[in-house]
Length: 239
Image (tube, rainbow, N blue to C red):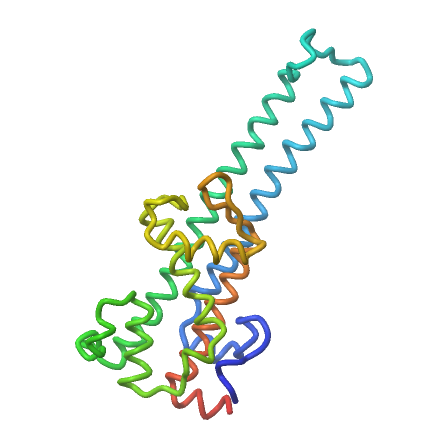
């Protein structure tokens, strides 16, 4: 079994027993949370759009009159229009929060795997990786010290995670704004330009539901393949 090239959604990679044994419950919870969050946002957006359509129909029928100034929006429509714009901003805040929590969950689960093998695992990380990010440190420990069967260079998800890392750092350290204050601006800009599910409004990074789902699948898939490689009893079973 090539654990760097497993196909299918991350939650279909293992049966329920294996998912329990690998403690993937937090990832499952995040998946359900994302669905509930997006359903809520969609319902709120739909409500305001329906209100606007209702008001437009009333104007057409003569039940409501429009302002004398042709450039002025009817007050009733203006309220729902404003709420719709505010909802888009709120949705971006929620999606950024979801993404950073997802990334933190991945970091936490991989470092927990390292602690299960050695409580002092950080001191065993090769010196040249000690100043790297948490994910890199954890993976270098598992590969170089614990000798798990996993090759970072052959993992599509690991390459994707480098863009996710820069994106997460921009949110945490620069409020999700891609400006000259962010040191990895050029690299992150290149990552965003290759992602139809991400966009820029001025210097603000705009997240979509699609991107959150893509990130969840990427991180879930990566976590499963690493944990399968890390647990010899499961590795043998999966071959």
